[in-house]
Amino acid sequence: MSRISIISIAAVALLAAGTAYWLNASEVPRSRAERPRVWPKPTEPPPASPNYHDLKEAVPSEADIERATQEYPLKAEQTIERALLAGDAQDREAAFAYLLPELLQTEPERVLGLLARLEPGTARDTLRREIAQLWIHQDTAATARWLKSLDDTERRETAVTAVTALAPFEPEQARALARELDVSSEERIRRLLTAAAL
Image 1 (cartoon, rainbow, N blue to C red):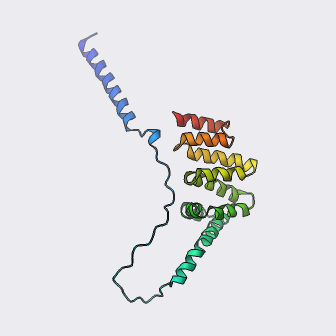
Image 2: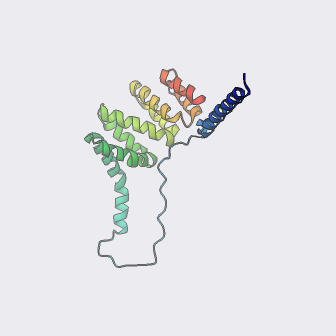
């Protein structure tokens, strides 16, 4: 073998090894994956401005603001219900992205009451899956208690959804939840938890 071909082979091997190392180094390890952000907790409003201006429009009184605050959760619940039953994908996604996470954090019993009122069907199944996917990241213990309260068919299907949502971010917690809800034998869950452990 000539000297040029040995050098060429060595250069190609080094280039291949360097490329493989570079590609592996640019990947984010699974253990560093971030959990989805949950709806932020309410904060106090900023202090009033010392600059005052006369306004032409009506300014709500403290009683108006208090009444609006008390009515807001009911209006949010009604908006979610309308979006589910109307079948408009854009309205439904907006309700699931903004209103549902907020209600699950502040008044989860209101969301569960809405789910209980819905007739079996597509709207109920959709809301049940969304609750499982969102709530499992906010309050795992409360989600597990709720899942145990569902009937067998809904519990099994929804537990798989919750474990699937949790596994990429908290594989050990997902494994424990799968055992607790008796879905660890499901083929999809076994494959998911095996992949998450790698």
